Image 1 (cartoon, rainbow, N blue to C red):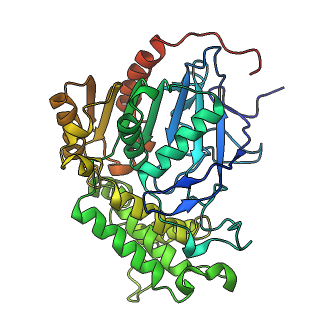
Image 2 (image 1 turned 135 degrees about the vertical axis):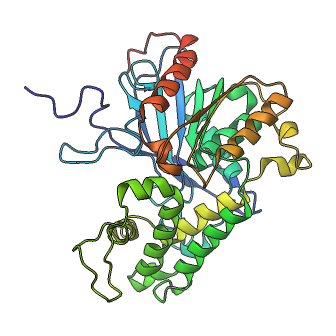
Length: 388
């Protein structure tokens, strides 16, 4: 009987919902009395629970990192290229955990989930969360799973920021930290892009001050515009030129304001798809978490001081055409780690894919990824539990 999935796929996977009764005090001063996290796991946890890897997602990511939810699903998890048998994050060696962060819109407690006090969706009443809040909730998740120390915490973009915060807040609970296509804090330009996206959403007449659930509608136009602006920043000029150039849909000018160039149609398609799959209030929350991230602020704005107590090894990866989180920003992290005398490896990958390059399995990127993960695997026992 032929296999339904590729040999290097984790195959069929099923999300799990984990409930936490312990209140979570947030950086904002507010408290979540209880909350849920949705996770997926791949591979087997070994006998001494030393082979666990946490995958932290970016702005629009979620717990569905790899594999398929059904035989009919055409598109696998968002990082399927990196997670699976024989892939860089090899599920023959590692037990991999992906989750949907607090405030997310894919099952974890967030704006589109019921507020236990009212029975209605939280909506705009859901508190703003920070990267440190996420890391605290993830540490509690590790406790629940019986994982005292991660073999590695790995993330790209906003996920890389979470990995870095893990190393600072819980230095004894991870052996390796992989920060991919990230930055130690946002530039003014990045904050500006996020604000344009938030304004596009909040000024949509269907937003209803965040209470659109009660109106049985969504701010579709605002979400489309937010995604279109964001998507432009994830691509490089060269990549867009190579993919679209100035190609036209019909080959002739129409002399009207409808989409005529292929790149226009592509952006509209991306915006349309996103507007029906992602929650607007969650988008606002995620971009604010990006804006607020600045671990050096608590150390008199010294990143090397913020990293002084870290104990893990670091791998930092950047991409040449990523102008959203440029290689210069990754080198800031590397320089701070060197100044703090911490073990760090760094790779700058030549790529035309811009910020999206961290999701694309280019040969050099995969070579570097594989090489570092072999180092992570070197001190992990092979045997797995019988229960897996």
